[in-house]
Amino acid sequence: MSSISESSSSPLTRSVVIVIVAGCVISLLGFGMRSSFGLFLEPMTTAHGWSRETFGLALAIQNLMWAGAALGPLAALIHIAIDVASPGANGWRGA
Image 1 (cartoon, helix red, strand yellow):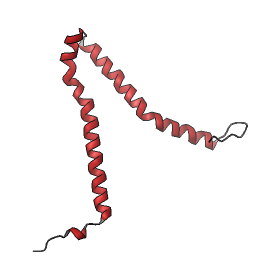
Image 2 (tube, rainbow, N blue to C red):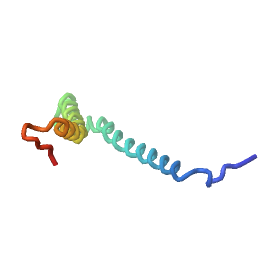
Image 3 (cartoon, rainbow, N blue to C red):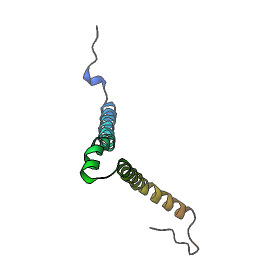
Image 4 (cartoon, rainbow, N blue to C red):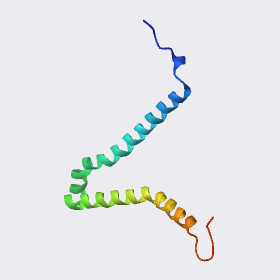
């Protein structure tokens, strides 16, 4: 029976595994935080006298703002790409 030695795994393979594990941990923390707000529904609504719908609307607005903040850099890159592809009448191409 042969055993696989540690020298057979390349540094690239270890780097890929580290990146995948780090990405999974980040996703787990981010999605867990978003999913845990349902646990706070009853304590928050009873403490403040809000209805279930009000709390749900607040979470929906928060998720839309979160998505907008995540897409902001992408929109900036698209704007820069369009500006560089077709500069204004004066020929200014941006920084």
